[in-house]
Image 1 (spheres, helix red, strand yellow):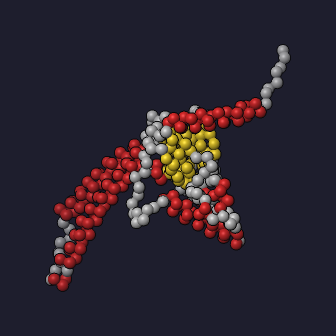
Image 2 (cartoon, helix red, strand yellow):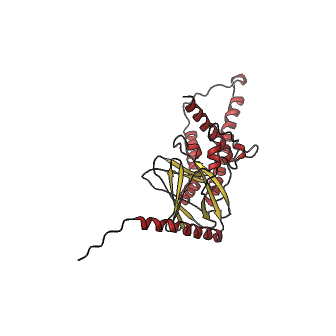
Image 3 (spheres, helix red, strand yellow):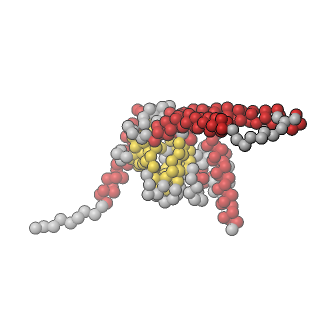
Length: 286
């Protein structure tokens, strides 16, 4: 029982540490960040637009409310009105909110439609969630591999290991085999799971997508600047949910092509060995 409680406490602590590290907030930061893709920047601008509208509405509504309370209070001789309703006022406070919602719906719908359009992609990567790792497959390229938490972080998270997590670079947010994509190219993702529901989430890309067994969800991204972008599973998927990071490395096209060629050559012998290990049917003589 003590061991189970210790594991639960360790998992909770790891979740807090990993979330804080992933967000990497600056001092006094209150707002979301624009991200590194056009989708994430569209979401950021939409967020700022809606926030601005909400702030204006709040100022108008609370301003009118406080003005009415102080201007027409009983101590100043205000007398309650005798009418039960006012048709003009009811029409105004119905039409104005509807108009505001329509104004907000247009950019929101435009952004959602853009994010859902996975056409004209140069690459398709199949992402499969497992307890508790990811499998990446470059469709049509014969390249696939598993990606899981690094050994150093896995050892440091064990109770009684004696390893200080602060000494491990990118603790709980680093993997042994990161996903590599080319910059300036539209990459389509088809996302599913093999056991339970997971969620593939890299905040800098601006979206997250559930990985559901038996279903295929789609998403896409286009990163224009080289860099390393980190995330993790965003759906509670079991006891090691907090130890299921994601690392995406965006490389210039030439470096990506060289990496992809290296992966193909490294995985080709394994594919050949599997083919040779299959039983050969006997030859029958006539």
